[in-house]
Image (cartoon, rainbow, N blue to C red; front, side):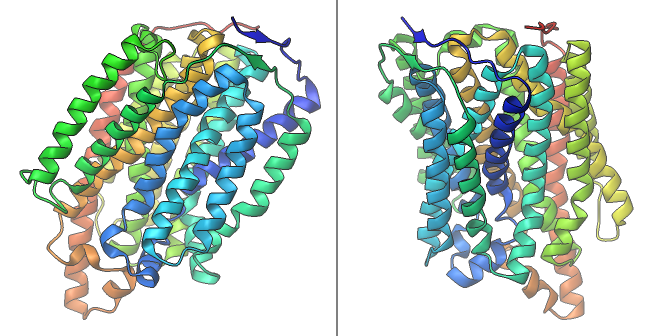
Length: 486
């Protein structure tokens, strides 16, 4: 039996201040998924960690993905507020540790610690927003959350590049401290939520199996064909381990008294289709956020800050589409075909990205980015809205955590797969070159190397288009639900 206080009303100014705190926390968590991408060449050079470079992104996404189901489940048991405050503290503490790391191993470990806090922020901000707003209002606010998530995910390379060039890469983590303190102070002062008390059994075995499964999948995708041959005992063992852990996880969740991931939720197409689509979308979006800056720096030869500026059309498209998409859904009370159209738009843009070359103009690539941003912008938060609208309130935290976990899977496993595609398209030794090293090569060698990078990275883009078009086909089967006003 769950005992809760009455749902607090949060009208007018109080609602907007609460949402502002949540938006700031969302921005910080999403920003740190991609902020290291343009700083990685500098970080790798200073900390001498080239062989583990990709783990700066993967460790964060992996830890975030593992943490989200736990935060979601615990919030359904105990309430959101205390856990939300704890997640902010964990994230800020992890950021401080990352800023003072003295080795690549330390930085990767601290990024994982930071990712735990980010996982809590990602799921709890969206769950709390759903608690505070009616379904129709929720669509409007989810649009704002989508805009902030898109801005943070794609602006990360811009912020990281600017701070790395003009101050130090360590400031990409230091900057989280004052912003996190503001989010913590506002949330502590303003955020009022119902308290929950309930008999509980935390599914620690399920959580451990899920962590092991996701780790095996990420390492399998990251190491296969690059660090180790696909037929090597290590990669085969990881694949077998992932299968076995997956089977055990399903068996445990079917019998657990309070499963960390209730399999019954997947009986609904309104839940399953959005969750699978989020995995596909996160793979494409974080793949673009990771490899577009690399294309601009390594193939086109632009600086870290300039590469961030050239991504602004993608950022702008996502913000505009997410904000307007929320308004449209609020007015019409429907979201299905808007999401389908977004997937088609992003898929077409992915196909166009694969045609880019060394001499593609900024106008042409910017047009592709706008098309992609418009598509991704109307998808993300409306997919979450589809889940939250059709899930019972008692499972809302868990359901939201599954969506956030799915995004983490797409980020960790999907980007690891795309990273393998990238590495497989380069000659031995080329993947170790930094932008500065490429520019220092003799003219003929530099042009050949830039062409090799362009071919390898557009090979990655060739996967993002079909991924999003598959998502569009899948979304065509999504039930067309009408939102309530209360």
